[in-house]
Image 1 (tube, rainbow, N blue to C red):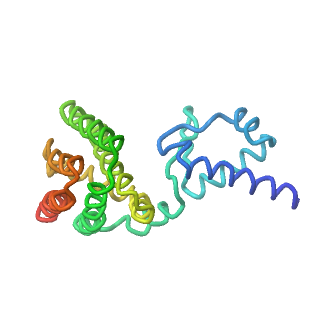
Image 2 (image 1 turned 135 degrees about the vertical axis):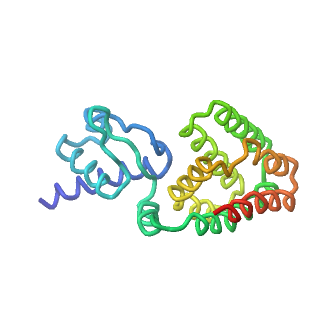
Length: 217
């Protein structure tokens, strides 16, 4: 029994590490059971129990007839999401403003040429999604742009805080699109400021659009 429990714990940690590292990103389908058996070097029952453990933890979700998907990359994010599930949108925007202003300021100081290209590409993807009118794609591309800015800040603590609030932020972005609070070009000036290496302007642009959302909330 001790050995079996140890095998399950080891399998859980192996799966968790692939999720937290981004090898299996949020929204992706994890390999099917036979592949996991081979990957982990354990039996089917051990794989099933390890997967079920992460389903209970909120990191994975089973979809009938489709497979098992990554729901969250962090158990802390799941806990945070549950705790603030009933938060008012203006409270979420207020926290976003605090985090995203600093992220924009640091991103403008620390961006590399690769970062700049990535930000411009994500800005353009966001614009295409808006033009296409698909709400899910609009939310997804907008969220990815914000995450890219936070990554570009090169501050691991800021990135961790942001990622652990990602579900609430995604819900807020969806709310803003549904209520038409987002203009299709509302981030163009922000990205231009970061690419140009202007931290004060980047922070100001972030403050302006999020303060506008606070007025609307």
